[in-house]
Image (cartoon, one colour):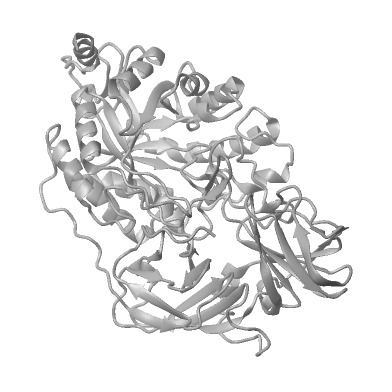
Length: 629
């Protein structure tokens, strides 16, 4: 006990007498007194992570204000490289990607910023924020000094950091510190030359005054490979960790300076097939209080998680591929829809003991509305809509090509060939090298035969006649965002074998479903009556009538199997109620019109229910685990 008390006392930030000119701005590390200094005075940050890329721009201010009113004095922000440079050399910082507008809102709200620009961020985000176009170089070693990786990463950072420099606190902005890379110690490469190169770049573009730091997990290996002289080493851990032991580990790498938990886990992520994650509120608030009592600066990950709209969810690969769900609710203090929770109120009660809470009421939850049922109509199956979904036509190849080779990085591609011989009896279609990345929906002459899935279903039976059309719709379920498997190519990797025959002569159709939906091209029935409505990949559409309200809602697809939903051309993300745990998709009010009919489009990949209804509810359902198919 005495050693723990001594450790705590050594960690506390003493209060030196410093006179600071009123107009001077500085943020630094006081190694003598083991603390940060802001404008020459001791400073402890109480921060929360928020991802602008997962929240509609219209709600940024609302979420930031709720964080401020909780008592936070800082936020932590990731910058996803692939969100801003989806095409190499073309940078997008408009609309929902307007990072500087977000920083300005935080500044106006009174929140400092801890910036995490990567280039790799993890974040359960597609490929950990790295652009998929990097994989056009088949032998590239990501997150290393490999020049194939280092040059585009350096180009990105040169552009981004130049844009960020005016936002540094000492330059009049609100960025107090900047992370270099992210949890690098958990990556296999352990390439110090890479980290040194990044360190040089960050200093070149941001200057010598800004605090640069690293964050790594609570193990010696992670701290050894992830830290570098000249970068302040911080640590991350959750409620299952002994605080003193974790900070002693940080002290071995940073003998002096502030104690920092850069990711204190208020919740956790969900994969399809998991139970919805839950982290106990009492444990979170108790542990937060203990760390703040020690003088530590703490960032809560997440404070609000938001949503993996579109195709932005990541995936993990430990023993098998596991895709992250659309909701990034994270069991966080602010819900996916930005609503204050009991966990937030408990955290606020803790913070009151350490700093003054802003005066005034907590902003309320955004209004929700149950719009009720609507019935969708069949538009057609994917095969019948190829002229609309792939207007440029197919790429022809003897063997399958990857998404990356065709520069179709997200979503879906259709691979078409013909059966090389008669197969009157069920005959195995095999992916011998586990090359289904990630799901394949198989039809013969427009009749759905079944599916294949990465790591779990590599063989299925088909029947047909020589020359019959074989269509395989391949779905990218999100690239691996953590660990050694982030070089995650998508497609039919390697050949498919039908019985003893290697299938060749492929026509490969990149599908741009999002553009077709946004342009209103998928609103009528194109397919005739030949196809049963519920079989295989099929598009449905309908209209949610205007009610005079454009409030948040949650769409539930009871009886539907798996697919994607668009509202007024905005891709809400994936649904998969049969596997769960997520049963509803969040529809932010700004995506809806209060005065015009709202167009709803659904891509159902396996089987739609006969009723074809979807329900708009006033509350989410995130915790019902379905059957694991």
